[in-house]
Length: 129
Ligand code: HEC
Image (tube, rainbow, N blue to C red; front, side):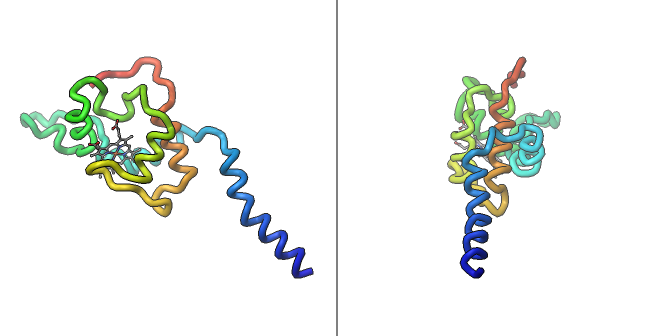
């Protein structure tokens, strides 16, 4: 009887691993919510405050990407059309330059999948900023 219980608990432990391996692409709708909570404070859209030189400074990620790509890519992540889910997930888990890594206790794997789906969904008419 004990052995049966052990087998069942092992199956219960392994089930999330299996279902995650076969997980379909994430949900962009939930990804948007996760993105707005965790990423927007740094990757927000440029706001014109009216004071010269202050608008980009409010968003370190947007400002850094404007400098990095010098107009060859939109600095706002949601306007990008060349991000891949793998790139987004790798950067979020490892960080890059001034961007800190994000732990699984902050954004779990399913939520990160959703963020990646949100950032890589097809954009019919991307705006350039
Ligand atoms: C504390 C600020 C901060 C937060 C929070 C943050 N980022 Fe970043 N992110 C940055 C900075 C700064 C850069 C530019 C790094 C560089 O200079 O290469 C960056 C770069 C990136 C890049 C690389 C783009 C490229 O082409 O180089 C991706 C993708 C990215 N961030 C995704 C995210 C996602 C998704 C989240 C939320 C889960 C997030 N970031 C949260 C600051 C942040």
